[in-house]
Length: 181
Image (cartoon, rainbow, N blue to C red; front, side):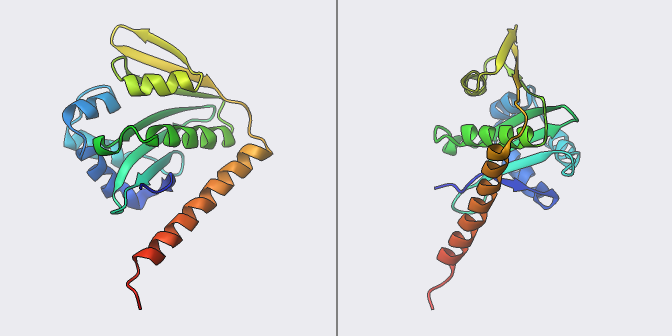
């Protein structure tokens, strides 16, 4: 069973490249809206500003990233993009990562969250509509917008608890993976 959604840092850049390179050309096209070469992918990942943005990941039992979400942030708005490896789809990972990113954006004071994807990306369109995003489809592309409420004590506490659950999950996994004495 995959782990919980957790924040990644600059030291995860190589893991991010490995994750995206495990997507086939069609899936990369769905994630980025166009074909992305390995060189272009590396440039994208090297350009992520981890002080401004948040990147979330979900790890498989073997510790590799099976899902990634990039929440690109500006003062009042944020854009979300996410991907899940084919073997891990249909298990709610994309929805969990989306929800975690929405919570982070809200708690940072973001007013509007948006997402751009190809109109054929049914999974992302489903998540957007389920979240109540305003979806506009023109030709082959779709844009979705969601106005976020301001943070409150509950949303801040919810994010704190999720962070603590990740630490507990890691501690339990480390304990279970230790050889018996």
